[in-house]
Figure (cartoon, rainbow, N blue to C red):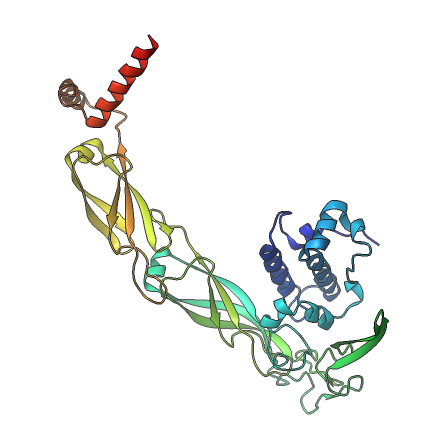
Length: 378
């Protein structure tokens, strides 16, 4: 039997990852290797799915994680780690209901989640300008959909599925086992019908009895103004159908915002840096600055210092829901020329002769302190 892989490597997280990061990583990978979704070798997908469950059980439990960090896999002997290799998918879904329950992934479960299909995830990339106005984007993706030939029941046209004799059509079975406090009863998905309650004896040739085929889907998604990086736009009913072909899951669109060449977002405000010449800073002037709505002229007050910030009111991004816009903060960067023409050098030389008669207050204070300091040293 091959050695077990490092649990952090299995989930693809750093050793100092917090509980939320571990949970997100497990959910993402579990969705990838979900038995109804994984396109590769089914046995390999099942092995990886159970490996992920084992890693998550240990790393999501502070006590087990501490023992694993100190002693490795050997330190978990007797720590109550489940043998996932012998467990069915339904048992794993039941154990981690807080993760899978909201994503409609629990197969064969009784109650309201049984008829809900699998949720899907994708990413949408938008420009910073789109955050100001909102936008629409057209997505094209693939999903498992009901087979058009058999209508989703998996049976060959003209035939119907039959009731599962193992579970009597309930989709669940009970297992009793002795425990410390007597007999314990565990309810799990029926191993024969996979929780569906029905068995296909004459499968559909199009879907091979699964009731589903992979199909392309095109969808226009509306992105509201003021959305933030990483927020989710949920498209209800655009996920995959349930085993019974009833309620679909949802499509979760994670929003990514492309970096802007000039503007940086800080909450509802945007920030940019604008270079000016030292003559503009000293005398004042007008410069063009980039904004979310295009180029705009901005006044530079006389005597502006390097690093000063000029605020353009209501040029920022809207707050989600209210529409109230933030500001744009423009930081002035005074550029000193590296090369001068002979005329520029002559004029600056004339100006330099006048500096002793009109020294800036900050420079005067610096020179006085300098004389006082070195005078005390002598």
